[in-house]
Image 1 (cartoon, rainbow, N blue to C red):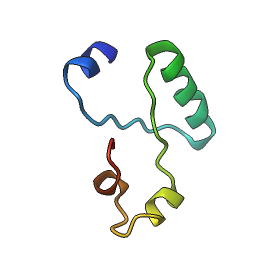
Image 2 (tube, helix red, strand yellow; image 1 turned 30 degrees about the horizontal axis):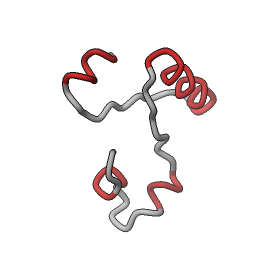
Image 3 (cartoon, rainbow, N blue to C red; image 1 turned 90 degrees about the vertical axis):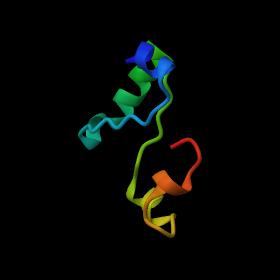
Image 4 (cartoon, one colour; image 1 turned 45 degrees about the horizontal axis):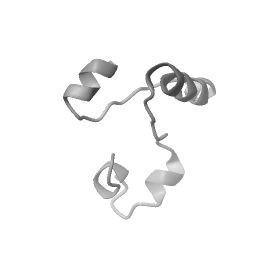
Length: 59
């Protein structure tokens, strides 16, 4: 995943059970140096369109 990500910037969606989200996030950073933002209901509600992927730079 890391090599592909370096060659082609893109969005990556990882779906995990709520109880594992932070564990996955930490492991992806520790093992691959990748930082991810967690999509939450609060993030969705904070964006007028309801779609933070369009509103937030870097998504």
